[in-house]
Amino acid sequence: MEPPIPPPPDRWPSPGPSPDPSPDGRLARRIAESLAGHDAFRRQPVAIQVQNRVAILTGSVESPEIYDALALHVRQTPGVTDLCDGLLIADGEARLRAARQFGELAAHLAVAPPHRPIRRRTRVGAVLLALPVTVVLIEIAGWLAILFAIGLLALAADLLLRRRRR
Image: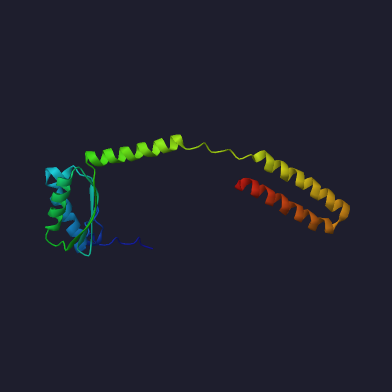
């Protein structure tokens, strides 16, 4: 038996990743390359996707001026029919606003009343007491005691739940 013959070299896969052959992929690549060519846009953490010739931008930019210029640049790119804008402006004012909101939340948590710990010993004690009582009743009275014990357990559970709601 002879070893199999490898396919001809023109059918072998290329060693590197192949570029996206779709029109949307080519448009996204063109937008990314044009943004990388500008110094103001190069430093912005912006992700670009294209679906049905609609450019989708996500990420953040440093200032409202860069935001406006970047959106205008993408809208004017040939082939882009619309822009779906998911960009955030991370200027100093926005950072200050976020820090202020965090400070308000921290202050609210600092003055909130402390959470009362649940007394678990009461629950455990009630269950530990109910189990031997149930076993003793079953031994003494038989199956009728099982029904009685189930009623007692339901009553104990009801009392515990009422205490918890208070």
